[in-house]
Image (tube, rainbow, N blue to C red; front, top):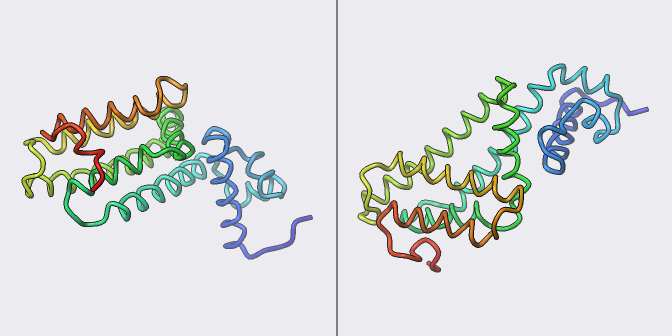
Length: 201
């Protein structure tokens, strides 16, 4: 029988279990039974603290995706825009990020039937766009990027990143080919020479 714990500690334990299941098996696997098994408690105890699995799934996605956003924003820093954009793309396209990247595909799919998850997904997409918009606007001001439509280029960038995530899930093309599509398309959109986004700083 699980030991009695303060409510805040138990909620944190359940949240951690939900994140572990999501990263290992996807958002669709975050069920009452799976979270209870991961936590090592009865399903009823999880239901007591998390009466809405839809809310738990949305919050789990938000926590994991926001952690990635915070990490990428920190790594991008506040230097010249070209270097910051290079850092964002290199980080998001780096090997070993498939677990978090695949959660986005889950969120888009499951969000069709979950207004709560859909809202969390839209909110995070807006925050990602805000980060990219700020970098692109800075690059235009610095004279590094040649575009009059930074918001459109930002949208294009995430459409490319998201499609490469979907391709990776089914093993379509090599990782280097998928990355090349993103880098080459962004260099063209920003009026940069070939290799500008992949050359060492």
